[in-house]
Amino acid sequence: MVFHSCYGVCKFTLISLLISFVLLFSFNKKVYSQNIDSLDLAYSYYNSGQIKDAIDIFENYIKGNPQDTKIYLQLGYAYSNLKDFDKAYYYFQYVEYNSSDNVEIDKAKNQIYYINRDRKNQNVTEKSVTIDTSTTPNNKNELDLAYKYLNEGYIESAIPLFENYVKLNPDASQINLQLAYIYFKKKDYNKALNKFESVASKSKNEDEIAASKEAIIVLNQMIPANSNTTLELYFYNMYDSYQQNYISNLLSHLNFKIAKSFSTGVYLDLYLDSRSKPDLIYNDRYVEFGGFWRVSFLKYLSFELRTGYVREIDLKKNNFNVKPILTFGMRIGDAKFYSDNNDVKKESIFMDIYSSGLYDYKFKNFFGQIYLRETMRFLTGGFSFIDFYLGQNILGDTKQLDYNNYGEVSAGIGFKPSIINFPVLFVEVTNKFYWVGSATRNSFQVKAGFLLNFNLPL
Image (cartoon, rainbow, N blue to C red; front, side):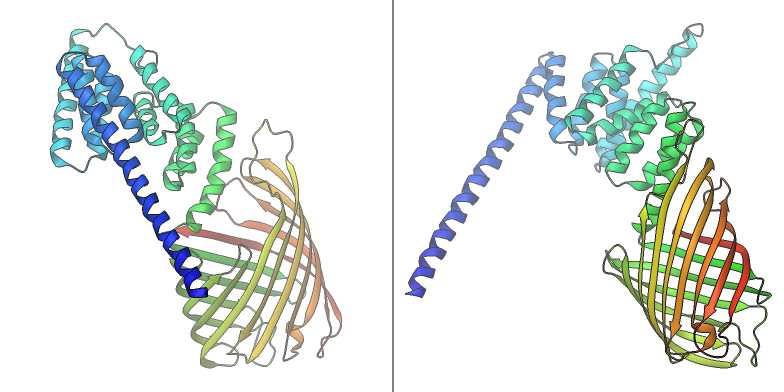
């Protein structure tokens, strides 16, 4: 009974799929046939001298077929026949940059040469005539056509028109900004960054400059996140007044993306201070390098496995190390990072949460940390800001070593000049309290130093 029922359902399903396939094939064939018929009509108009009618059909065709460069070439010839050399130049240039057919490219380059030659000769014979290309009818029509394509959703057809316009009008920052947003939407982040940087450096409009500089910051974070090879660098340096100790931690990853959430590469990890000795250890000092594998489960949660060679400085040991690390980090609130003279609101409040758990084979020890930081930021112009913050930090380990088990509360001030990748300078006061080992007393200290944290695409 079940077999017969399944057979009937399966038979009905197969028949339905077959009918759908036939209908789909028929529809596609019909559309293809319509395209062929319209092109035949366009060529018929063209050969009979009805150039404008042919152009209308050709241009309507390339809206849905921007990859068909032979039609762009035909449009170039059509506009040449109408003496509209600006439009002809655009279409020939499109073929030169986008065609994969060498014959088409050579034909387009020849026509571009003739147009440039004629323009040069015209300039020689009409030296006294100054032409402002930004206001010529053809140039304006090209821009209108670009916006028309953009509004209708034909982005690929709009881009070359915008690009050609800014070549003729390099100071047209508004059009460069439009291109920047188009490339950003297409996830072509490198081109978007190039356009935003151009607007930021050349525009005289403060709103355009502010929008571009904010986008530059965002793209400097997004480009590495979407790059296949990146260099990550974390560099923390500070002086502790209680220990009278200079402490430095450098952690660098050369990262190769294998899949969307998986990467591998090599790392270097250094932790040093100026006071620790074998008989009096303030911090675990070491130099370590090796390979790592990283999986990002969520935006805020990741797992990393490091395996490498380590030199334990105070213990005077060389060892092979394995270190699995589970990390959680997120920001709550909107941290502003750029302001211009027109910004009314220059402050923002946000909170950072960071926690990690790891096993370090070289110490045969489990470590855990939870860190909270609440910040009020005041923008001081450009990329510069001043942070006033409070911090709460808890660390612990399973070996119960006194210098690894403590809580700390802090209040500090951070400052960053108006340079994108410049480190943040900070001064903070902290109170540290220990709960295990011999160092059970509290300690009050002043810390001053800098923090550099960035990700560079390679």
